[in-house]
Each structure stands twice: as C-alpha cells, then as structure tokens.
Image (cartoon, rainbow, N blue to C red; front, top):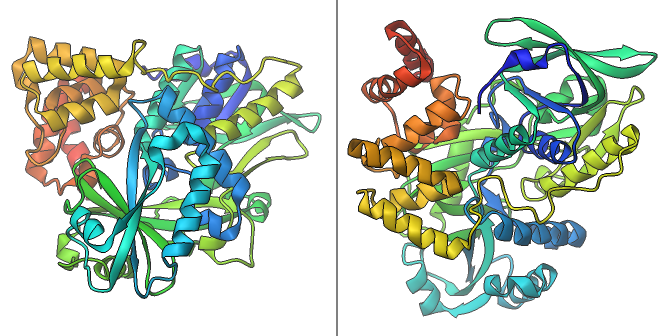
Length: 521
C-alpha cells in the first residue's frame, strides 16, 4: 500500500468517495470490484475517527430486540455469519455472558425468550453460537470475578469480534488491488458543479498542501460526523458520543453484556489484545468535531456501572487507556440517544451528491452495496454487488483450520510466543507468512515491543513499510493500538520511532517531532 497523490491528477473517475472509514472503504472496494474507476480520499488517516473508536464487535445487536427492530437485527446477524465465513482471520466468534440477578431489569424468562428469538433470527447456520443457560454456581465459576450476591444464574450467547481499524485497512488494500486510487491525508476542499450537478471536486494534499481537481461522474460523501458541517447534513444526522476504557485483564475468551444500574443502558466488558475493553456511553454531542475527548464524568460513569458487578472495584488508577468517538445516526429529536435506530439510509442531494447516513460496523458492507447500486444506476452500469460471499483480500485461500495449524506451528518454531502469534494471524491473515519470513531472517524481530502486549517487532516494521503509515501516531493507534493499550513514555516512543526510522525515512529531527506529537506537546 503506497500513497500517491499524483494518481489523482489529470484523471476522470466514475466515482469519488470522500471519507476513509468503514462505509467509504466498503463503497470503494465494491465499486472497484464492479469495474468502476474509483478514487477515495480521507482527510486524516484511514479509520481515524468513528471507525477506530467502536466496541470492536460484529454483532446483531441483542439490545435492539427491546425496541422491536427485528429487521435491523436480522440484517446484522446475516452479515455476521457471512463475515465469519469469508474473513475468519478478521472476524472471529466471541461468546457473551449475561448474568441475571434478583434485581435485574430483565429476568430469566424474558432473557431466555430474547435469546431464543436472537438465535432464530440468526438462522440455523449459526447453531454453534446459540445461547446456553447456566445455574448460579455454574455462571459464577465461569465468570469468577463478578459479584455473586443476588446472582440467580445467567446465559451465554454468541456474536463476533474484530479489530475495526484493521478491517478498514484491509478493505482499502483490497480496493487498491482492484485498481482504486486511495489517498489518506487528502482533504476535500469543495465539490465542483456543472449545470447544477456535481462533476468533480478540488482536493488538497495535507502533507504538502498541493491541490488537484478531480473529475468524477458520481461522488459519495461517507465522511461520518463531518456530514453535519453543512445545514443540510445537520438536518439529516444526529451525533451520539461514546467512550471506551481499556482496563486490566479479567476476561479470558468470553465477554460480558451488562445493564447499567443507573439508567438501564447496555454496556460491555470485552477481552481485547489481552486486556479488557469497557464501554460504551451514549450522549448527544454538539461539540468540536475534530477534538472528541474522554471527559472525567464519562470515566466515572463507566467505572461506577462496572463496579456494580465486580468483586474487586476498579478505580481511575486502573484505567490504562481510553478513546472517544461519535456515532452518526438518522435524525430523531424525540428519543434518547441509546434508543435511536442504528439503521442506515442513503440521501441524494439535488445536485446528485450521495450521502451515507448512520449505520453500523456490522452491516456496512450491505449498506455500501446499496450505495454502489445507486451509483451504477446513475452511470448505466448493471454489474451486481461484488462483495457478498467474497473472501476478504487477506483471507488464506486454503482451508482456514489447516492453514491456521501450519502458520501457528511455524511461528512457534521461530520463537514467537503463542499469544503474539494468535494476534499476528488475526491482524494480517495470509500476509502473516511475509512477517514470519522477516523473523526467519532476523530472530530478534520475534521479540515483543512491550512485554505485556502481544505485538512483535516484525509486525511493527511490516506495518511501517507496507501500510501507508504517515505519522507515528498512525502506527501506534490504528495499525497496532499500542497507544491505548499501554502508557507509552518518551523512552518507549523513542525506541519504537528509531526502530522504524529507516523505513519511514526519518532523521533525528523528524523522530523528535513525532515523539512530541504523540506525547501531545
């Protein structure tokens, strides 16, 4: 993946996609696979906003059954099953525990009914993810860290997990392989109209401030929260802020779905890279779109709600990292943020510019297919969706189970610890062989970057060399999320920056600048 702004200049594209999050990435990938000439630009890094600030889940949304949003749940569950099959390296099963207490808002019988309906909507192909009931003692043994006072029992049910930023990156790589021109750090300056219809745009390279005019027969705005910059966008969208905290490890291979005591909201405790992801919150947002921060009261809320369920309470000193993001939802001024539908819609302005509004990480592929269908209709192209049931760009071609055994065995022989190998495979899929070859050539690259986290130096170097990294923060927040999984001090940042400096072409001054930016100075 090589960034090349010059490829945007002097060409006419069938489609220009603005926004490099999950919706923009799926749209560009699908359109390129259908044979359209495609460009996608992103003003920051790929997945640098909402699409790297999610709960990292591919799920149907069990809680949406309470609002009778069966259509959304069925749609998301169908996508979950397809993604599990087409991208086993990128999307993997994750079971959730749901404790039932004597004072729980939803009791055993009602929870049983909801999970049965969830299984039914998922269909027979997901039988291995079906729910199970556990007695009080069984559930307490399974989740030994939770408070068992008043516990009556509990359930587990299946959904799936991913690394959201790497999901987007893989789709961008797939779009490039299919012929799309993909440029990060490239801002849309303005749309160009002719006869009242959009026919292109002016974009600016954020690295050297060069400008270019792009001719495009169709344009899709998939800029997420920045859609609300215009009055028209504000009329379509509602922004909802959510935060997550990274906490010490308490979970092994299963997550927890919990209900907040104070307001009845659902939140999660999820195992992620060996630690615990706690979130999320729901609150209307009207602040600065470019600086969405975690606030002290939000941290206090999540800790207080989690501590209702823990034998050993967490404090602010236990918080390892945090992040905040904005969900874009269809306009609804009546409902509470947590009750607003997460469904998606496509809006087309009078000038022909298409806008993607709302949606979910899980169902973005199908929604993007609808976007490309609309684009193709305008272009007179009849090629159908090319992403349904298509293996992911980095999915191994052979039987996944057999491939996994072979690649894991090789990683072990090369001295890579089991946990690091597991996450290396999930992060890179079939490209893992290339990373392992780097270790074969230099055994020192098998070492962990940070002792407590499953990332090795070979992974770090491979990302820096091949994944369109521009800044150190791109590498440490989205290519591998070290910056939110541990507290990196200046010495740690220098060690990492110096390791990748030859690949990035950085001198001492550039290294110092990157470190200061990461430290927020």
